[in-house]
Length: 199
View (cartoon, rainbow, N blue to C red):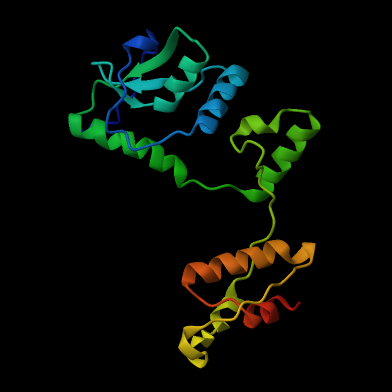
């Protein structure tokens, strides 16, 4: 009979001093993110336990532990994953973070939820974006960059002329996206960009 997935059946509360961070954890947490995690714990409770091995080594939840410490919590909820091999433990430290990153959003549903939460006067900064909530603007068409040419062959000694352009406010985001994409490709940004923006 095939063995099914292991489902831990016990939630425990451990003192924060007992937990041992994994010294090779490649995931980083900025002070801003830790503050957001702490604010989430205050608002919603400690809903996501820290995953540990039987030797108290953290497998997932380094950021949650730091946030708990910043809040002065003496204990945190943990789930002990004592069924993992040493290799599986190391791999899951990475997988737990990466698997969350590759999910997406249904923009229309998310837009509606954010709007309704806003009407309920819920603090939307607690949702993980901070003050940078999604704008749901349509993606900028970057196909105009395909026609950009490098004019340096016609300039003596590789000297390039600069042109300062002031965009209308309604064109700024599109211009910014086009310029950023062009620079990443190493393209020259000039009159072709202006023509592409129809300015």
